[in-house]
Structures are given as structure tokens and as C-alpha cells.
Length: 272
DNA sequence: AGTGCGACCCGAACGC
DNA sequence: TGCGTTCGGGTCGCAC
Image: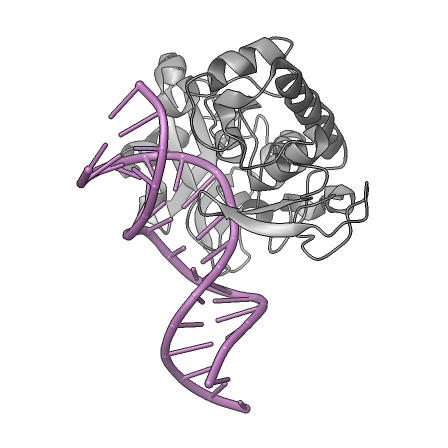
């Protein structure tokens, strides 16, 4: 499941392969995937070219001359590059063909991913981009920023870490890992966190995301990033999907609970 | 405004 | 073996 590190990896990989090639055709096989008007989507892409790829939170931002193509991979979205004469595979929902007959194909088993084509001036006013909070690694992401954001949140801290408007880019895997790093119980009420605890969360997010990006993300379940790049961060996971296994700090058993409906893994001894 | 929860999806894992 | 059921996971939209 792509989180910030996976998206960063996809961005970096695609940048080496698809920039500055004229788009000659666009095919959409699952129309609900496109949030903007489908005909406008095709018309505006054809004839243009990608000149850069950026990322904001878990959103990929493909820059064209006049537009941005926004793409969210949700759980299982992947991009593949294939020759245009290769047969369409199951779950390939959007195909962008470049003039050298290379296809950028969007593959999504569960059809959860979304794309949106917007004009350049719209970017900062587009809701999904505007609402993103600070990213791990941003100097402005400090303990006091976080504590202020948590002040009126009665939800468990685990749920709040998944809120993209506070820290942008954390998903279920890294939220579990960050709380283990910070030695904080996932059920602890967000508003009750001390400045010191907020500091440990910020530090954990910075350290873990940096390391995950360096390793190309986490490959887990059905997710492998595009183009044969395989994430190796799963070897670094300490608690996620480790229920019944021993805590690397104290040797007590990792447990699995539900928080806000989401699987949550933690060490009850280290994270009291 | 903050919170809770179903819907969106489909394949894998599970139960019988 | 084979069938039906449950689960997962990010985000949105709706109800409270």
C-alpha cells in the first residue's frame, strides 16, 4: 500500500523515464477513476508532455505545460511502462501513450486510485492539495506545531496521525511505526500529548520516512512499485503486522488492536 | 467543527 | 475441494 515513501519512489523512478515525450493518445477504461471531465481530460493531455513530476503528501503531481495531472495511488495503484502493442492487462485502467509508442499504464486492482487534471493556476486552490499538512522532513514540522494541531482533538493519537491535514503522508504502516519509535500508546488521546511526546513523534516521522524513502518504500501485500523497483523497508518494520512476535526493545509480545477501524500494532509494555 | 461510520473495490485469507 | 464470508486500507461524504 503506497504511502509517502512509495509515492516518492514512484516519482523518482518515473522522472527518469517519461519526461519531455509528446503524449499522442490517452485511453480510460474505468471512467470513475477520473474526477475531472473525461473528454477534457483526454483532450488536454494529448499533444502536451510531462515536464516534471512532484509530490505533495501521497499525491503525485505530473506537471505539463498548461496543466497538472494529479494522481493518488490509494492502496494498490501502480504505474507500469510498456510498449503500446502489448496486450492490455487486467486492472490497467488508464493508458497514456507517448509518441515513441511507450505507454504509461495505471494499474489498480481495487480501483481506489483517483486522477484529476487541473489547470496550473488551480493547484493551490485544489482541495486535496490545499488541505495537506506539513511533511516529515520539513523544518516547520516541530513539536509545538504538532501540539497545537492536537490541542482540540479528542481522538486517539493513532487516528490523528492518519489525518493528512496535520502531518502529510503518513499511512497506517508508518503511523504504527512512528508511535513505536515515540513510545506512545496508540489509544492515547491526542490532546493529552506532552510537548516532549510531540517531539518524539516528529523525530520518529522524520527518521522513519527518511529511511523508508532511502530504501524505496515498503513492499507489503500486493504492493510493488513500478518498473521493478522493490521497496526494502519492510525489513525495518518493528511492529506493523508483527502481532505475536517479540518487541525488539523488551521482548514482550506485540499485540494487534483496532483503532478507528484500522489495524494497529504496538508493544503494550513499551507504549503504555 | 469535530467525530463516527459506511461506501468505494476486489483478491486473499479464512471458515465450514 | 469448493463454496460463501470476512477483511483490508485511504479518503470522502453524510449523519449526528
